[in-house]
Image (cartoon, rainbow, N blue to C red):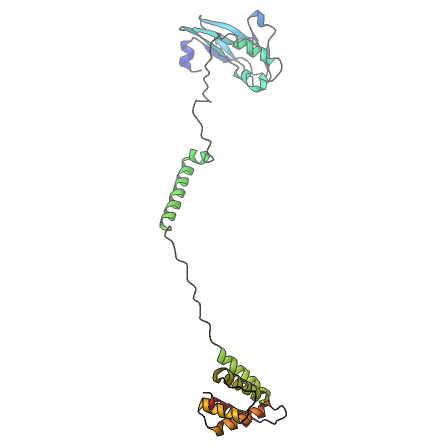
Length: 272
């Protein structure tokens, strides 16, 4: 206790022993069998001076017996002072038999409502936030607020929706001409003019059927006449083209490159 309180109550304490253990007992004879053995963290302190208004309620055994529990008359009430507060901890209360001594100490209190005051357990709600350690340290607290402020500015200045990059889609290229050239080069390399004339003739007859609506079953004079009327081309050209078509359809006919070129030229002129 502070010197001011000790002087006002006319009390003084001193260390009387440095032993690790001592026995506490109460001076009232009815409690003489209810002692308590302090075997750990004994304070070794006793009252060396008490005032006339004080009464000794308990002492401790050791190298020198000295009072450690007193009652002080003060004002309209009493003060009970005990120099071994560890007797109220679980270490001593849970040991069988020790509870009798503690009960006897509290039996001196009057039978009324008891109000407890403890400096370690103030009636203040403690924060249960997981950030309580950060907020309890100034450096960490300022860093935390700075981080939150930076995130807020980042969100504000980046809240504007950004349009994603529109990919450039290239239009599909018409490779029909390249395909035809490739096929033509293939046939040219093979040198099969008869097969080329056959396919050219089939293509021509297909167009005549679909576009001019002329039956191509018989390539006779009637066919030549109808084709002449539909296209307006001379009968001589149409007759020559028909002869070349028949030659291309004949699997045993001998076809040369000149025949293929001539037939292709005539068919382009007739169905241009």
